[in-house]
Length: 185
Ligand SMILES: [Zn+2]
Image (cartoon, rainbow, N blue to C red; front, side, top):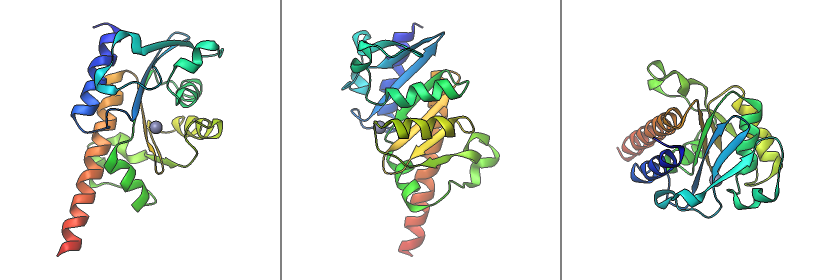
């Protein structure tokens, strides 16, 4: 499958599985020194080949303004870690969970080791400071949640990043539902 087709497939999948509303997310892949990233203002489940912008990892250019407003964060993650793909989504239950609890702690961590080390950070969307903070956290964790915002899921490929994003949202949803049922009793 071509890289562009993968973007289209995982964009649709993220929306279909309820991991993101169609307007609140972005996708990138690193190949060599080039970052392929969704353009600004794209709709995740209606991506076309024209919605993917090619950017040099190391040298900012006039094309950067066409990329997602979260480009700075994607750049920092690739600069600081060995990840090759990033999915960013405003996943509802994950964001709520990060507001409710100081740490991500789940019963399922025994079967999903990457859930043992989910980082929570804070920062203003689109800022250089947030990019630095997420990049630094991605050195130690593949899942970085920005409070009141969304999650950056990092993987060796898009499938890997998707599985982590999906698993995190699943366990957060389960924990929140459980708490609601217990509170109602
Ligand atoms: Zn965002």
